[in-house]
View 1: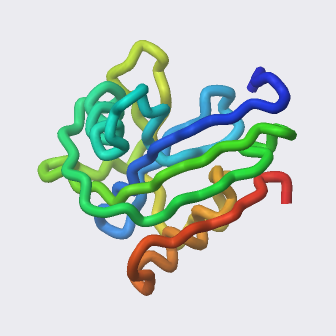
View 2 (view 1 turned 180 degrees about the horizontal axis):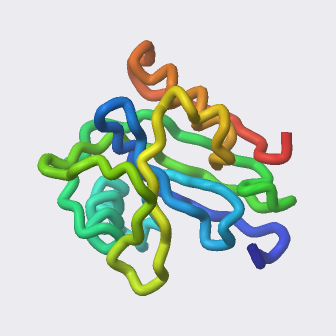
Length: 153
């Protein structure tokens, strides 16, 4: 990933869980997995960002449920000095079928998506690193959780 040092990102992502699997997509450099989402546009509600990103990337019409986590991610994606703030929302999309194999989205970038069993997240290189635990513990979590994460630890 070629990102300038001292770079700051604001990302919004959707946590789409169905049949005990979570939808992930491969990072642009292929070094790991993240939740579907992207950068919010200026003056765009973060919930609208999620709806737009799922439509643009996958053609899914999602319903945003609730804000789950605000994650301050230091050294994001293992890149020193890359600081990312993320807002993570639970989403639903009726009619979407969980696929067994990896697939590509509708964007020309050919981003790979994969439904991953929640119990197997310990074996997946996921960013931010705290997501595996957060997703597994989601059923026991109530309210919004503020998380500090360092992807180099």
